[in-house]
Image (tube, rainbow, N blue to C red; front, side):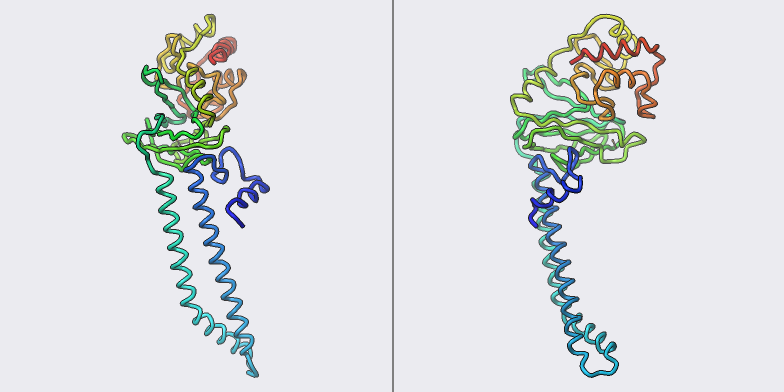
Length: 331
Ligand code: CUA
């Protein structure tokens, strides 16, 4: 069975998907996938050697049981002797297998965590309980702009992810694209990733970080460099906010924690909402981005994600709806 046949088998058993180390879409994930293939080959070889050795020992003992009246005792003695003779072969197979695994692991590790000189793009990703602050540099030189819970990567380009944490230890993991790396408060980790296959993937925090650890996910979009540039240009642009009840309620109630560039909101405690409606999901991958879900999240955050920093704000249903309608215009 070739390494390529593994995804075929798992596809049949339903293990493939947008969050899977078995469907690599980038160089680093492919190196890990190759290491998995190597491990399976070595394990299969060990299994084959053990089964063949046992079969051989039994067969020899069976042949030599001879005219002994107590044939079973002879069978056991013969098996024992044959297994003893097979010891050097077993030891050799173990040494060879471990050497192959260590060598493969060494090169996979180098491929996954190598940092190259001068990557084209640097993206800051900071873990928060329980969401992801994501910052891109304005290509025009205007500093860093901010988004949340959605990482865009240009296909075929090496991107340096600068990983940090604001509160507790989190772990960055997009299995289709890269290996996982911890995000540690007070420390900066770097992970170079090269995505190859366009599509939507799912990232997930891989270090237990509190009650909503399971709901600390994010969307990853791998797209052509042209589509990526267009997306980044749209993110860099300030919001085009509408006026009205929703905007007024947001400014009075939400702006202390959330920023909307171009609308006078500059809170930093929660996710930047400048282009929130252009995202695929909200509440860190918990809900699909629809106006109904926006309203539900605004009205009942503690019911949807108990313990979230987003407080239960006593808005009237009409005001929650107005804020949702306002945010839905921020594309
Ligand atoms: Cu963040 Cu688990």
